[in-house]
Length: 213
Length: 131
Image (cartoon, rainbow over the protein chains, first blue to last red):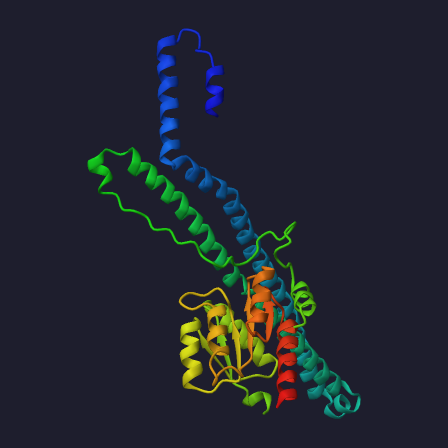
């Protein structure tokens, strides 16, 4: 509730108007004191960062979820290819045992070899996809670091508030927090509507080409 | 020099990403790669052994990718080594800065095998043209 609105409140039926008046004065005094101490803007700033933290945590959930699905899909496809090789190998073994000359002459052996080669190629592509899916570790790791930094800022504001509100003998015991803002931004979690960032590799290439690189 | 002889240095603070890049380089025919976890380690390695190509992240502790790039390009014995930036930093000003500072290419994460292959081959072609 904003301080401007406090005067519009009326004491509840039965409540003492004097107590209400005193509470109002104390609240206003606290508000003014915090504002004078400069704590409110910092708290406000830290609180403003919370939606950004939510957005970053959503990004992490999405990236990890996407990676898990990508890995599971690739494993399913690779297992199906593997099963196909097993089935065809058994069938080929049976054909060779029954009539080796026919198996070769009919082209069945050559077809089998060709199919196995194609299958292993597809399995290799699935394994590469599983490897690439692990890039979420790097990207989410950087985003986690940002959220930790934001939580640290909020903690810093609250510690300062605690220090300023505490009795002198207690305040002297509290540690000062040194903040250090990172220079680099890490992954862009929401590029929509932003003109200062690129959304994909194509935009990187276009930008560099426009500059003659 | 054949692909197998080319020696890469992969610089990234995340071991997972180093392994991914190393795996992809192997798939596209470059088997000789070593790893460094930040710019400081990378610079020491570059000064103590011969490398032909650097693939570097930007956002790293101790010495970031921009600082590593500047150190490489200001060293007469190292400045011929191409440095390909592979990073999550997607701000246009970072991309332009990297190009102006002498990066041979810029890839934003997440990327694909095809993108890495295309950029590496392009840089290799430029290298052979200048030799």
